[in-house]
Image 1 (cartoon, rainbow, N blue to C red):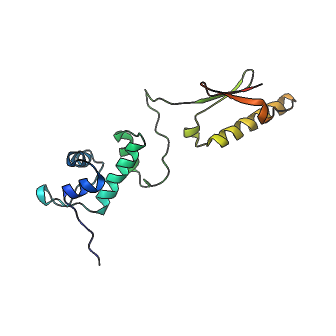
Image 2 (spheres, rainbow, N blue to C red; image 1 turned 180 degrees about the horizontal axis):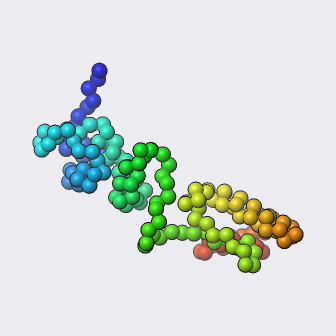
Length: 156
């Protein structure tokens, strides 16, 4: 059996490119597992390095430590990131698509897990359905334009 490498606080902080104080804070906050042992004899393993690198990755992506803690507590922490829970004060960017006068489609692509191409396909499908219900011919994709600034699509 191969022994897992173990590191002191200076070594693990260097591997993760973080100050020692930050590593200690993450442990205190429950973001990183406690080390084996205590004080100067505390030892950290590969799992600790992985946890610190995950935290750095999510921080560079702009996530708060609170959100990172939620992600790291999940059993499938390596799975795609689910949308953040909505809370008071949450800032979201929504696409507002005008299908026809009085018919609008409002969507937050990230929460809906749709790519820009999928959002456009959804819009075209809704426009076709609306036109079919009204007995009209649906507008072609070329006859719609995206208005910059407000995220709205409008028929010409």
